[in-house]
Image (cartoon, rainbow, N blue to C red):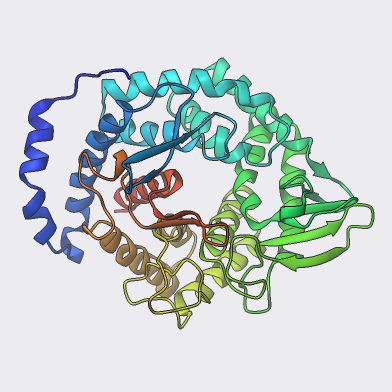
Length: 404
């Protein structure tokens, strides 16, 4: 276990304020100030987390019972979120500890640029190297991102006009001749848009557009809720099954799946300027914000149709993703829509930044957000912190600051 020097005074002052912060009520006129404070706290928390891992050990979740930090290798779909979160935090509040840690993890993660066994290269490589290249463009980062886009594009099927998400397996019900697509895959298209912008090769752009169009046609119900998984016949392109894997039921609205769709189509509009993607994002947003099962604090249940509502578990990660997406979506709309999206994001952030969801420095295994739900049906990462919850929370806070 490596040891890093962290400014003791900062940690002591944060611990000293712990009880006071727990009593603090975040109000609308103090949200910006609260975000500034939380971002500094988040930097200290990730400095603390960095003591617990070495390159190749990517923080995945934390189990309070047993005080166990669970990590993954670089091939896990969440591997890009730890360096990505540190890049965001260091952008806001420079930390030599996080800079050193980020560089070490990026060096380890770089080998995944040639990974053709996953659709999650957007999460893995764009949340990490995409942010790194944005902050400090250089040929090495650009090469890694281009190779990542090439690897992702190998999973594209031109008959279905979609990117294969999972390889066929009994657990996802994909059989011989099937192509499995999950709504999560909308989040990986941003990498392809970057590749076309960088290389001027429209192949990547066209793959992203085709995938998004196929998803609009087959993943969404008339009310703009989304199925989690669609299975296609890879020879005919026909959608054969509409099911779930991580939601409560095939007919339910898995909360994080809805957030992936909202975020994904907001990115689609940003990248293409095509109004149909803006309309899709607005419809998804309206579905979420008008849902009778959305709690007053706007932190959604893990599934909008979860058994046991109102006592069902919430998913803080879904709230963080939705808040970040709504803040961007608000910039593409005006009037009542824009204000509605901003106000909803503010409500989500205000509640996520309260002690119920936000950990103090040294708690929660080093993660920021508590009460995430990874995969309820499989009973994994249930009511735990999640690396992607932290990533999108920090992104949402930075977007709010920039918006203001």
